[in-house]
Image (cartoon, rainbow, N blue to C red; front, top):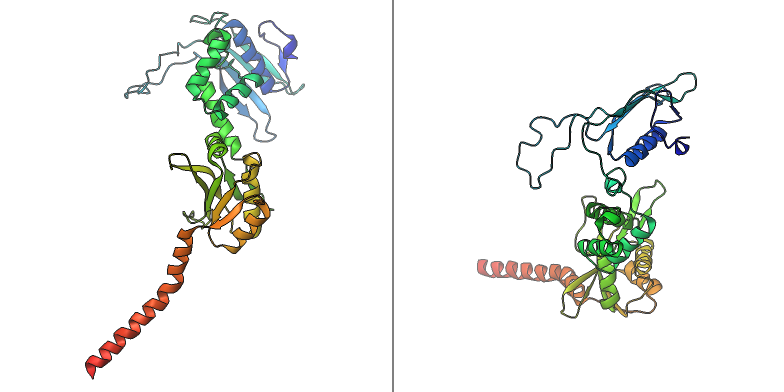
Length: 331
C-alpha cells in the first residue's frame, strides 16, 4: 500500500481507489512542501467507478480574469503560478486499479520550509486533545480569539500549534451544529421535535436557573409548529434564554420529551420554580418531569385567557344595549 512507500510517485504505480491515490499525493505534498488540489475526477456512468483523475499542485493554473477586479474587504495574495506539478491516473481494466500514467514533479515556485509545512491547508489537523481544549474553552465562555492565543502560548507560538484561527472557528461551528442533534424523529425519520441549547445558555442556567418560565406563544413557523422558549432573569433583571424548542404538537408526550431533554442538557438540575400557561398537557408534563419544582401559572396568560373568554359576553351586552337604545329612539 501507499503507506509503506515513502518515495516519489512514479509512472506504473497502482492504487486500489482514487481516495487512496489522493491520500498518497497529499502526504507527498506535505513531505515536499507544496499544497495540493484535485483537478478532475471522471466517473463511469455504468458502474460508478473512477476511470481517470488528476491531482495537481495548489498553484496550478491562473486566476480567472476579472475574478478579483471588484473591491475586496480582505486582500488575498496571488498564489496561482501555473505550476505544472501533477499526478494523473487511469483505470486499468485488467486489475481494476488506478495506474499512474503521467507525473510531473518540478515546481515553478518556492516550497514551504519544514517548519511551516504542517500549516498548509491540506496538512492542518486538529488533534483529539486540541479539540477537547477548544470545546472546553468555548463551554467556559472564553472567546475564540482569546482561546486561540492561549493555545499558541502554551506550545511556544502559532507555528507549533498545527492549526489556524480559521480552523478554530470552523471546529466550533461544527460543534454547534452537532449540538442541534437534540431532536426527536417520527417513524418516517422526519424531525418532529427539536431542542437547542448552546454553551452560553447552559452557563446562564447554571447561575440563574432557579426560576424558569416556559412559553409557547411567541410564534409558529409556516407549518404552524409551536415554538417554545425557556426564559429566566439574571441579577440585573435582564432576560436570559435557557433553551428553545420547535415542537411537532402540544401533546403530553411532546412536552414530556421536551422537559426531559431540557434537564438532560442542563445536567439534570431542576429549577426551584417553573411558570407556564394553563395548558392541561403542559401541566401534566411539568408534574411528571419537574418533580422538585414548584409549578406556578403566569398571570399574563391568566389575564389573556380571561379577556379571551369574557370579551364576547361583554360585546353581546353592548350590542343588546345599543339595540334597545335604537328602539327607544324609534318609540
